[in-house]
Image 1 (cartoon, rainbow, N blue to C red):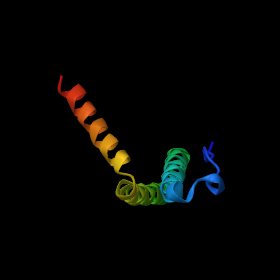
Image 2: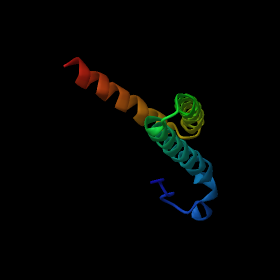
Image 3: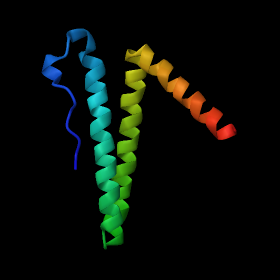
Image 4: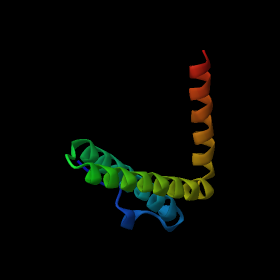
Length: 94
């Protein structure tokens, strides 16, 4: 099942629309990754499986592109991402 956008982009303020577009792009790419990887796991033909996994990998690059842009446009997101990374490292080091 594919995600639906949690907000109507047409109703987002001008000052927030770019950030929300980037988040929607990330959501769409994550859906695509999940879809292609699930189909690859089910595919009988090795060639089809290989191509689906390659496409999924490209979608992961797209997530990185959207995330890089989001971090440029939302300093709070950048700070929270860093905090999240620190928390995981702390938990794993215990």
